[in-house]
Length: 267
Image (tube, rainbow, N blue to C red; front, side, top):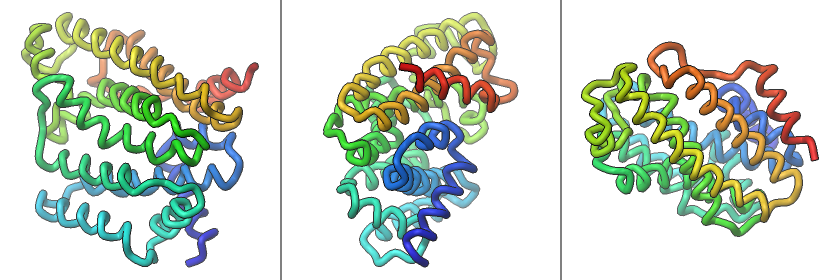
């Protein structure tokens, strides 16, 4: 498989699976867009194994095989594209391995005692994506790239409470559940108060992480600002709906997404 064929495949994966990122990266020059798609497709591969239906032992084996594949001559299109992107932009190995460590953690740990413990997990599964992407954007601001990744993961956690519960996982910190008197995951006043607290934390991290934009060229800043804006819009919708995350997952319509993109394009 040629490199361009591999990039075409990771582009298809990103458009199909990563609606927010796909809207963001469309403003990037082609080489950067392809590289970010390769990173996303790799992260999606890791996540699909961790969240799949295989027995835990097989999940762990497959995740370790993905780690080994980082050093092998690639034949899979995701790894062909990723290898080229790594060489072209100097994407470090460490965050790619951290994603695997986060996937393994999902096979071993279902609850989190406090936010410090949860933040460590978020650094692996989302902050690591920021660290992988930041050299593609042409920045060295790893601190704010990490913070932004954590912010987006916190929004995902709020949105996916019900879905994660069905997977046997609960990412809301145990000490905060206790502090707010949440005894079960249901739309109670206590749960809503807790979620408002979690939303405010996510917004704080998002505001801090967006300082990354100060170190980016215009098109890279548009990319990051767009998908961050889509996540912010999702959080706003969840809050406006009283944090009812137990029905249909909150998703933005195509016109709403295009409106966010247009807003980011305005000077």
